[in-house]
Image (cartoon, rainbow, N blue to C red; front, side, top):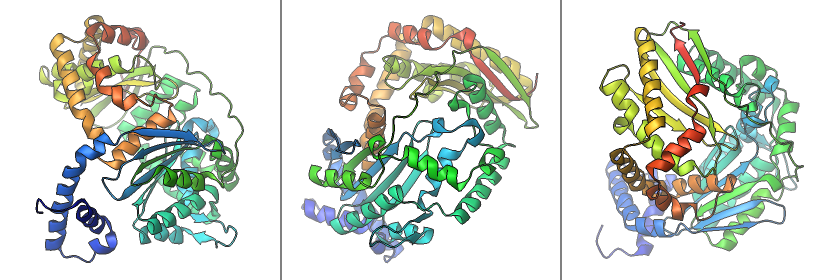
Amino acid sequence: MGTHTTEQDNRKIIERIVSARIYLRVNMFVMKKYLMMFAAVCTAFLTQVHAATVIDTWKLDNGARVYFVETHALPIVDISVQFDAGSRRDTKDKAGLADMTNTLLTRGVDAQGNLPALTESQVLDGFADIVARYGSGAGMDQGAVSLRVLSNKADRTAAVTLLSRVLANPSFPSEALVRDKARMVAALKDDQTQPAVIAGQAFQQAMYGNHPYAFDATPATIEALTREDIVGFHRQHYVANGAVVTLVGDLSKDDAHRIATQLTMQLPQGVTQPAMPPVPPPVASDKRIAHPASQSHILIGLPALVRGDEDFFPLLVGNYSLGGGGFVSRLMHEVREKRGLTYGVSSGFSALAQPGPFTISLQTKKEQTAEALKVTRDTLDTFLQTGPTSAELKAAKDNLIGGFALNLDSNSKILSLVAMMAYYNLPLNYIDVWTDKVKNVTAAQVRDAFARKVKADKLTVVVVGQAN
């Protein structure tokens, strides 16, 4: 691509590459040529994308919260709509309801005014025909849908219209529920043979007891779900005044306002949801589960971190040194490099609306289970006492700061980050201050934060493989 290519030319090139209708017509030689041009354009606009991470936010009359990042580097719009509709809103006997409801959103749409009902294939084809990418999922805290579409008005309008119908008027056909229940039951039965899944479920249950964070779908709970359960969950949790709409891309603020309004205007108003029960205080436990696998799967941890906690940055930096930094982490050095007890060991914090888990994870030969556990716990104990060395602290900061720009190098990554900020009500300057927050962490702050959040005498230990 020549140095005199204009911005308008660049945008035309991108539209040709993104559009699957063009993409499918070109042969392999031409496709490679266009991909090279696309990469060059993205590189040229990278600075513009970074500079454009300015977040605007407002609330609609219906109570929906809107977050918007305007960037015209690419002719694309990325949208996320989140609700308080995660698995924490399940009941124990209906675990999996949040996930099933979210899955069934695109299985059909009811008629609305002059708009006809749509089947599942018509919904999915409707997105595909305009090269729009639909996504969805239910986590522990939230249920969400996402959309990526070209920013031209025709495609954008068609995609948003369809998404608004999916959100507000899903038909939840009984035959789709029967089919998807069967698929999920089959997957769950397979999961129950996998040592990693068994360990993860036992770990959550041991840490969280009767709290909804401990609930895992089982074949029995999925079989128990009815269409009335799905309809009721959707009506209760997919509500306008609980919606968080995040938009990133080639839009004006007025466009973003119109889109957010259209996506939420047909949703009902919800009532205040009951407060979640508190997460139980951590209690030391040691659970061993026999399994014929050749290796033991080991998880160690406890509930630790709420999203937005002031200890987040010291824990982030400290964990990089402890077990989050791959081969430069202390756990990897002690457990793998010095003793060869595992192929890999890692640690991490999962911040949630209520205390999410701190987890150390590793696998080892069954006969080495006791030794690997001892070395892992000894390494953690030493880190809790001394914190990172000055060299470890510097390496952690350098790597975290150096890699942060990768969270902003595409619209979809910006959307993911801003949507997280929006859902958990983090400060609007979170992105701006992130690197400074990391840079200013001290070793003493790391020690203090770990002392508050990680109690060595309160750890849950789960081993699947070796039973004693």
